[in-house]
Image (cartoon, rainbow, N blue to C red; front, side, top):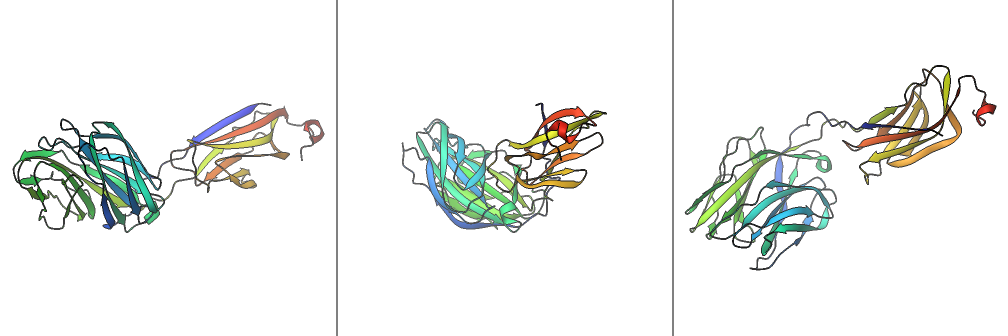
Length: 340
C-alpha cells in the first residue's frame, strides 16, 4: 500500500494588533547575596497568564561577569536574553536582563543554568502586565541600548527613543559604590541583590535617558524598550490538499494520518477532512491521530480531498499521510474490498 506524505507550514500572523498600556504588578523578588555562593533558583508568584517576567541574572568571580546559558520555569516560557551581562571593575561582576512570558500563573521557580564565572551569583524577578489580550499578549523588544560606563557619582543609562507610545523602559546597572535612588520623573528605582540599581518606566513616549547616583567608583549601565500588543488576527489554520489523481485512475484512501512538528502539547488542535467541500471527518485530534476505513474514500480525477487544521501553532509543520491503493477509474466496489 503506497503512502503519500504532504505537509504545509502554518503561516505567521501579519503585523500586530493594537498596542496596550503596561504596568508593574506583583512584588519584586531577589535572592540573597553571599560572596562565593552560586544561586541558581528563585521562587516567585506570577499574577496573570500573558504577563512579562523580567529576570535580573548576575554575579561574577572578580574578573568577569557571570554568564547564564539558559533560563526556565514551570509556568513561564519563551525565555530570552534582552541585555548582555554588564561588568563593573570595582565590584568585579554585573547583571544581565532576561525576559519570559507567563503561561500558568501562580507559584513558580526560576531555574538558571550558568555557563561561566558562577563563583558568586544572584537573581531578581519583576513582572509587568498589559491592558490588551492578557494571555495572548505579544511582547516585543523595541530598542536595545549600547552600554554606558564611567566613574564617579552619576550613572546615566543610554538614551532610547520609542517607536510608539506607552513603552516600557527597563534599565540595569553594575555599580562599584553604594547606590542612591535616581530622580528622573516617571521612573521607579530599586536595588538588586548585589546593590546595583535597576529602574523602569512603563509609559515612555519620547526619547529618555534616566539617571541615578552612587557614592563613588566605576559603573556600567544599559537599558531596553519593550512594547505590548494584542495579537493580530490569528492565522492558525493550515490546509493540505491531495494532489490530482491521474486520468483514468482512482485512488482508494484507506487511512489518513495527521501529525504536527515540532511536537506540541496543545490539546485544542482539530482536523476537518472534506471532499469537494463536503465534510467527511471532523473534530479529530490533529496533533497526532488518524482516520481509517471502511468506508474508504474513492478519489477520482478532478476531486478535491482536503485536510484542514484549526488552532495549529504558528510556524508548525502540519503533515498528512495518505494510505491508498490505485485502481482503474471504473473498478467496482467488489473489486476493491467493498467500497461504498
